[in-house]
Image (cartoon, rainbow over all chains, first blue to last red; front, top):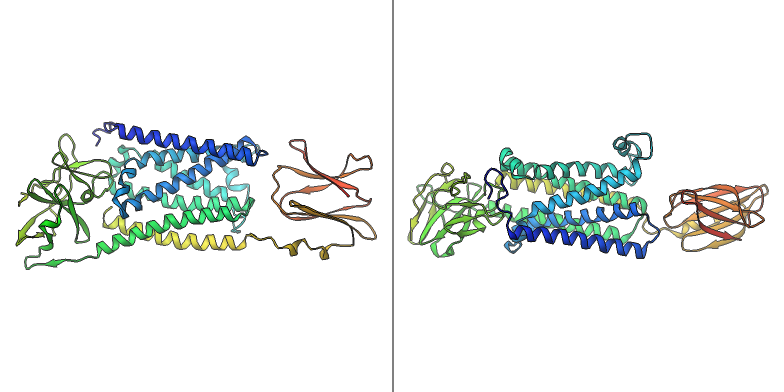
Length: 343
Length: 135
């Protein structure tokens, strides 16, 4: 967690994660260059750089896009979500090198502004197979630039997590543009079944995982429970919740996490204030609910981050009756103290 | 993600999958993955066939009419060179007159008043000879 946007959590895990990203990128580039030199020695150095960094960026984008749905479908993938932003910024840098070299190679030798040339050198906008694919790549690069430059916690804090997350969903539009950029660009020069096969497999994997995760979430959203005379929702038996863990329930279309800890029960809103992580999939660490995504913490009895941090989430009233847990579906204002149920 | 973001996320993917699937299908449909050998048939060639050479990269047919010789070239694979200028090979076996230029996977017809003994393809930018074929 950061206060005043200081990188207080630049811990050994993040450093190790970043080293893995850097090493993997270098390994990929070296392998790509070696194979290309062996198999296609006639190519120029500029072409080699454009293709190496372009394919690296596409590969990284696919990895980035599958992390989210994989984590929603199976919590075992949560550790790789921890530092996804660094992976995103690294991917943007690879895409930027690809784009910069492509513009230098193909658009700087004329007397037209290179950026204007990207849009005007091929005006076959009415054709699908001869479409000016570089325009699609350029637009995608603009979106990735916007996302990389607003990835810092400063923007997250000032835009609000909801708006920030909504804006960062633009990555899906960038993915669509990049997919078409590669698909149309590669095939205008070389129509090969292996290339189309790899791209289609990537598309099926990414879209399949996202849509599966989305439908799983919809199914959970539609779950309704038994409501008693006072309007409280009957959610589960007490022994269904593990110690220092939570169970997540849908209350009025929002998710609520009920935590069991030190012989007590408390309920808080399931969405972390940092990046919307699922608090109920985290656990109690040092008496605090700890978000599984980036380690933001909240006190279970009042939904407040421990001082000096200021994040707050909504809390809910609980009641126990004959071993069953009931929840009042009306959320209390964020940070409201609620006496935990003693077991 | 809260309820509204989850809903937006789902809608975006439903739209993206539908639009991308249609666009990818339409663009792939127009691409020629299996070049038909019909395109390379000799029956469309003007005049009488004099010589014929074929390899993995191209098919070359020299034909003649009553007025001229025709060098028919079908490029089968993408050209790796930036510039591919076709020259005839003169009587001394050297680079002769320019017949034309190859720009990609297409069929070309280059006419010549005199008999063509062979031709060479030269990358003018790198000043390299890419191909030399003699009949």
